[in-house]
Length: 401
Image (cartoon, rainbow, N blue to C red):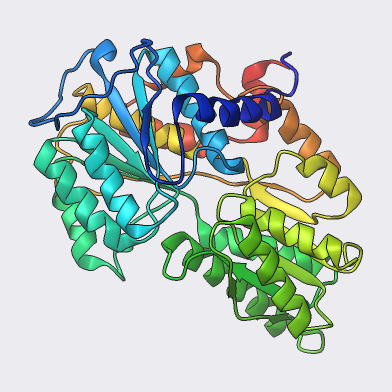
């Protein structure tokens, strides 16, 4: 078995980004082609790309960061799939800055990508992204995100009407929020501080909805033992932001006994943990979050983390596979249909829970090259079933260990 490939590869990715210019916060793009060709095309891809051969396929990735905890995990699994399929990949880190998000799509189209997967920061950015891809005949899929039909009806319709918008891969965020709150409530926590990342982000709003629902349910069932959830302190996606938000919440509420850094790639969580440690409150403030840290097992053991949802770095893998099949001409008639791929979170609340996750998602990746090739042949319904089935138990069964 390979030794702790996650932590080693994360370090290699960060070092590699300095060498090839990949994933810097200014939004520059870099190629990661399996073919070894590092050239970047300057002209936009006009017209469709149906029926392209694998060696000619280039897929762009617009991501907040390809070097933070979660982003580097996403890059690792995408790169593995690209190498298995002989596909070129190009990354643009946009920091969830709106103008950089929309510019990243234009940049990737101009670089000759036939397909793009994107983690946007708000629905409004998708209006421009969809139009750019329509104009250039480039397929587009979201990961970790979905367009809200209720709050962004016009953009949702534009996605549905587009011949090039393939769909969205995302998690059930309200359910995620409820389950994380329940971990804290089961541990006896009643004064919970909340740290958000970007106001208006659909994923954040879904999680917040779940946190509130979990607290409201508890309070209705335990009227004599009520819990309180604070209003969110916003941290952005930086460690410094997470630290300042945690400090503000601890200062405002001396009775605070739990924190939920809602997400943002892992860096805000690390900042919040550091702030609690500096305050000497690791034993009195439980922390739960989303996006697994590489040292989560140790943190569950020493008490600096009480539980976490994550293991979802394969989410962009399924967006990648959906776009790959669209480029290959295997998905037709996308216009008029919004494809929705739901991906499950994994939950851990003890060192024992994490040990099982570590065995099949850290010490090794959950899919082999052969399995990735087979996955690339699935139709959309098959891809949805494959995504929904991923679990620690599923990975263990397939590994035969």
